[in-house]
Image (tube, helix red, strand yellow):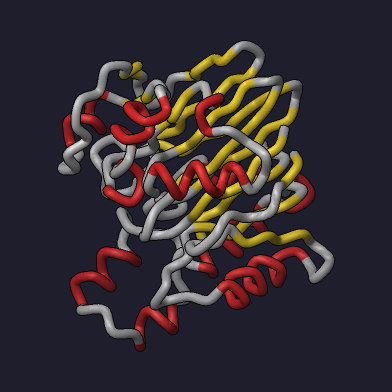
Length: 253
């Protein structure tokens, strides 16, 4: 299994996963031209993607779903509640394939487990992609470390893991009080410290690597997020960064 992040952050999200000859995109929060260009940087053609699987209704994850379908001919997998809740104008959608949160989607030998989250979306999910005994977690927009999340992280071989904010930067930063409360509340985002504690709780069952993801532009820095996760397991542990500005390197699971 190979994967890379096209972009990860509140300015737009999309993650590519390839396994068993199947090509999947998770979320469509960046423009079609940007997605096409960034996939090409790793020698992939976006028109060969088999499915765009949407995690939730927030604009940074769904805004270009209609464009991905009309421009590239890609089917959209989404829950009915998520489609109903989005305030984006997705335009005409001719190939929508509905799933229910908790379902397992099958693409030949590849299974995509959908797991309901506590994030403040209508029907938000995260994903575990499974192929030939290997498992990759796509774990962002989590709300808080809800029951069972540690077990999910312990079960995967690698993971994109939300490290949205540094608590001190958020507290001293420019956001108004209501937005700070939303971010650190039960329906918001995971902090570096919360992700540190999750990774540490995995003990010997931790993933082989973590890619810190969905970092805030104003309330975090990549070096802080990477270092915080490494403090949980040691400096030799592999921690990548899924950038909010550019395509990541190619990762292997």
